[in-house]
Image (tube, rainbow, N blue to C red; front, side):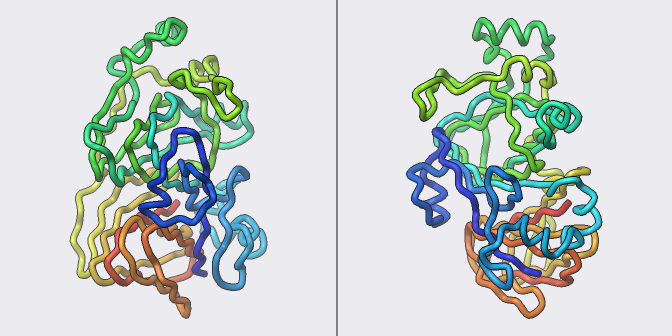
Length: 319
């Protein structure tokens, strides 16, 4: 089963125009901060654009076809396991943290949020916040939040196109202005804000902070992972691949298609294909669909061999 998905868009106040101008997304929103490219989350569901399930949400497809289309690993999760976004940060996002599964299920009733970021483009000098420069205690963290000095101890990182960051639950972080990225994350929308630059929301009031919950879940140490993909780029006949990450939650691969890429949707997992540049076609069985920058496709588990032809850059995600 090959499904093309309609993104769900978000107009958060820090967003820009690049998802409209660069990706050609058609939306009435003036600001498009995020496109949810693979989502069964209640806050933004994908709609199927083709085939027998056209007009249905992805959740409705899974309910109708059965969890077997998620594969053995995908069906082992209580909820649809991942959420994939394109994020255009024209301005700084709030400094924030996400809880792990145990805390989130107990307090929020949904998964925690481990995520990863693949930098698609950025302004010269753009930076993000990634953990702390040095270990600090919870007491110091609380005191620095209270007296507005905690930004003095955060780890600021200059970013470049192709950088990759693994943001484990409990890691303090913030995407900086001028960064365009793809985010692969657990299927959760639980965020605890620590600092928001004094901005006002659409209602004219400061957006809420979640200080005590943030202190509960934050790992107040420097990050240990490098800001690069986990694997080296490997050249194949007609395409090249680079492992971005592989963990117990998801595996993510960057693929550059020069002529044709051939993959397999096996029994273990469904496959998400997100086109981040270029154009061509994607074929699975008797189905062949045009594929261009900004398109998102879901291939059910056990779909077998599929191919992507043309000159394209892809992000392939499995669980």
